[in-house]
Amino acid sequence: MIRILLADDEHLIRGAMAALLSLEDDLDVVAQAATGAEALATARAVRPDVAVIDLQMPDLDGVAVAQALGAELPECGTMIVTSHGRPGHLKRALAAGVRGFLPKTVSSDVLATVVRTVHTGGRYVDPALAAEAISAGDSPLTPREADVLELALEGAPVDEIARRASLSPGTVRNYLSSAVGKTGASNRHEAARFARAKGWI
Amino acid sequence: MIRILLADDEHLIRGAMAALLSLEDDLDVVAQAATGAEALATARAVRPDVAVIDLQMPDLDGVAVAQALGAELPECGTMIVTSHGRPGHLKRALAAGVRGFLPKTVSSDVLATVVRTVHTGGRYVDPALAAEAISAGDSPLTPREADVLELALEGAPVDEIARRASLSPGTVRNYLSSAVGKTGASNRHEAARFARAKGWI
DNA sequence: GCACCCCCATGACATCTGTCATGGAGAACT
DNA sequence: AGTTCTCCATGACAGATGTCATGGGGGTGC
Image 1 (spheres, rainbow over the protein chains, first blue to last red):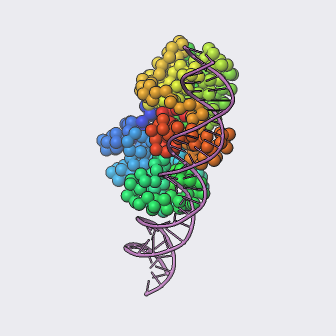
Image 2: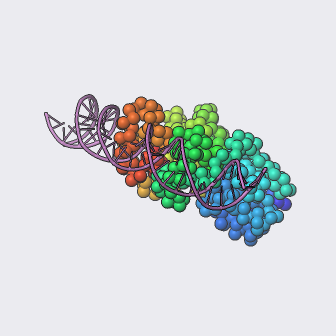
């Protein structure tokens, strides 16, 4: 019997997934959590075999939870399910030791199968998401460029970005300019959106 | 027996919701759809009593489907479930004749209850979302300002917005400036983000 | 009719941004 | 030791943007 921890902030979905997984004879949902912190605390208490974690949650996101889980409970396989699969998430997740990565568009059969795969030490990444991640390529941005672009995402003016990044406004403009060139965008906002879509920031 | 049409692009969630709803004796999920267009086509064929529709779907969004459904099948109650409830959506949905509006964070009990409420002609809006919508207030933007701001959302330069809106660049800048003033933002990108958060665009 | 709004436009001005040239400090590699 | 890269910074300039004044056309309400 595979003991599963389910973490998702959407009650409806979490309950529903639990119902589906429990239909399988060899799967048992032993705990549920609605936030990242709750998921961690619960995992420490029940020590599940597999943790199925939603990517976006109120406090810690799925990747952060996976990271902590990998350090504390190495015997627990971690997999992530998500609604909006952006390429960068997949990369970060794999780096955090996640062994399964699925969009919520898959059927419950696939979900159950992947739970089993992860439990036996295997890996599974949704083919479509993998293809996207590959086509997105590696980030051409330097770390600072990425930092600055991330701050630019919210539409802040240069001066504020400079303050927040502890840089001079001139330097910020240089990085932004460079990032705009690398992304082929026509201004920093477009560049920021592009980089976000690619998962670079 | 209440006959339900379920539309959601996420297989996992749709299947799971179907499973949950089917546990209720008086509810019967008679059809499912993965896109807005499919939902409409299916609704025409099976004529359900209640349509439970996800807000964000690949083609038509939930509100568009609800609108069409209200016109074609007035006897069919429409309700919307959503992951990210932005205030504007709720307003648009109610205007489109939707009688139930829920976040996916509710429990399955509530979902079932609301399905019954909608079926008997009642209305139900999640209290938290309603409060948000009220606190967001009405849009202070004129229709054109909203149009222009929406185009600005993607970070396009003024000239492109002008082309897309068939306005002169000067006029676009005036609207943008006015919108920036009304939102209290320090530039149009911030204004656009703000307006989007409030559901004004 | 008149006041009041929204729509659309133009011109002028100050400021903000994007781009480029330049340069120094420090790390990594040959 | 030299090359090359990133990181940080400054200055200068063109072009984009934000702001304001101004004005005509059209609709609504009193």
